[in-house]
Image (tube, rainbow, N blue to C red; front, side, top):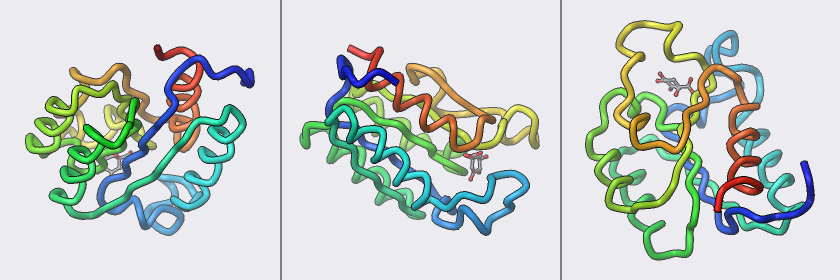
Length: 152
Ligand code: DQA
């Protein structure tokens, strides 16, 4: 990736429920990397172009909503979010993102469309700038690259 940062400067990465278990949770679906591995890699990429990146994981819907609301006034200019199981259930998180009016990319490690039908619907996709599903942890990297180099 080029070292020129013409994009977002304050990026928030949000991980939803059970993603704290990455590495030991169904590795055949979600891969062997831990959440810490993924975050470290993203931090290294953002550091190269001197963008700030912060990470937040919670298993609680209310904590995720509070963090999205916080992003409305803490200088965040871009969100990368894997809402995990709340993808398929949470009108409340959708409403928080609508209120925040911040651009976001929705990430899924697995291809949600090749799995059970209840995973095919997302409450977020129609509002997202883009959706990356099925590319494992590379999806987060690609979203970050977009935020850093393309997004204005
Ligand atoms: C997930 C897919 C969701 O359906 C699931 O509930 C998750 C993870 C993914 O990254 O593939 O917890 O968002």
